[in-house]
Amino acid sequence: MPPMPSSRPRPASLTIGETAHRTGLSVHALRFYEREGLLVGPVERTAGGRRRYAEADVEWLRICVKLRESGMPLADLKHFAELVRRGPGNEAERLELLDAHQRRVEAQIRALEECRSVIAWKVGVYADHVARGKAEGLWDPTGPQ
Amino acid sequence: MPPMPSSRPRPASLTIGETAHRTGLSVHALRFYEREGLLVGPVERTAGGRRRYAEADVEWLRICVKLRESGMPLADLKHFAELVRRGPGNEAERLELLDAHQRRVEAQIRALEECRSVIAWKVGVYADHVARGKAEGLWDPTGPQ
DNA sequence: GGTTGATCTAGAGTGCGCTCTAGTTCCTAA
DNA sequence: TTAGGAACTAGAGCGCACTCTAGATCAACC
Image (tube, rainbow over the protein chains, first blue to last red):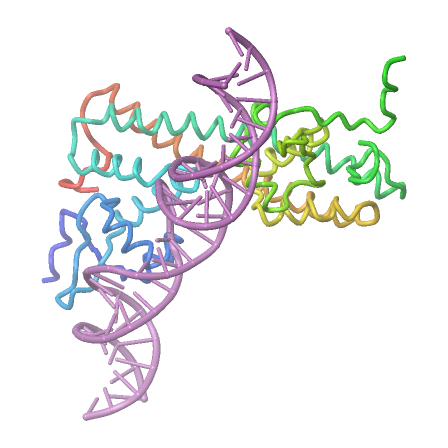
C-alpha cells in the first residue's frame, strides 16, 4: 500500500537553489528574507539542516517578488507576512495594505508615463536635429539657450 | 537709457533656495549634483560666493529630475551632461543615450503593469473574501494552501 | 550695530536591500 | 573513500543617492 497522499499537501521538497531559480531571487536573498521574517511560515529543514521549500512558499515568494518589483518596501512586506501568519481574521487589513499599494503602483505608472512623454519629446528634438545636421535649439553651453 | 536687454539671455538670478523650490530638488541635492558634474555649465556666483541659477539651469534640472524619476542612474546623467558640455557634434550619441533610456522606461511601465494586474487579482481575492466573511483560498499558515 | 535666516564648504552619515565572506557541514556520484 | 558542489551560519560590506553636520560667512532688515 502506497503512503496515503497526505490530505495536507505539504511536499516541501525544493532546495534553496531550486527555489531561487523559480522565484528569481538569489539564495542569499532567500535566506535574508527568512531572517527578516518575510516568509509566512518557518521553512522546513532536512535532518541535515538544509531548507526545504514547499510550492506554497514559492507561490508566496512570487507575490513578494511582484510587490518588491513594484516598489513595496520590505517593511510592508513583513507586515503583510505577519498578518498572514496570524491567520484568518484580519483579511480586511490585508486588503487595505494591498489596495494602498495598488494605488501607489498606479501613481507610479502615471508618473513614469509622464517621464516617458518628456523624454520622448526630447528624443524627438534630437532625432529631428540629427536628421537635419546642424545644432539649433539644443543645449549648448557656449551659446544662447 | 535702460541697460540693453542682453542678446545672450543669461539672467542667472535665482538663489539656490528658489531653484530647489522650482525643481523639486533639495538645496543639498543641488549642491551635490553640481559637485558630481551633473550640470552642464558652471553655476554663476555672486561677489559673496552664493550660487545664482539661470532659467536654463532650471530647465536642465527639470529634465534631470524626470530622468532620475524614471530610474536613470546618476552616472548616465553625468555622461549626458558631459556630452552636452562638449558642445555640438555628438547629438547622435545624446540621442542614443536618451533613446536607450526611453526603452528602459517603457519596459519598466510594462513590468509595473504586470505587477499591477497580479496585485489587482490578489486584491480581488481578498475583497471577495472580506465581502463574504469566511476564510478560504487565502493564505493561512495553519491550514491547507 | 545686531539679529535672523539663507548659504557656504568639506566631509561624515544614512537607509535600503541586498551581496559577499569565511569557515564549516552535508550530500551525491565515481 | 574521496572529491566536488551545494548549503549552512553570523556577520561584514557595498552601491546608490542623497542627507546631514559643523562651523563659518553673507545679506537684509530693524
